[in-house]
Image (cartoon, rainbow, N blue to C red; front, side):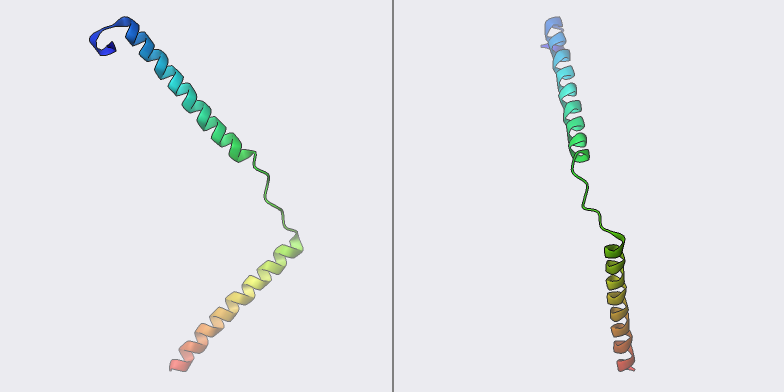
Length: 75
């Protein structure tokens, strides 16, 4: 009806658009604030981090040594 020139329908359409925009803004704001309110992940101490890094480095070294052994075995 608003497309046909009905002023009352045009005003109502404008109100609906504003309401929709407000609901969308509230939804976006609510989603971002919920993600920010999550409790922080458990912090690891320096010793635990160092130990994990050492284990990772050891695993990487072992994988590299295995690759070299496979390459040399083929020659």
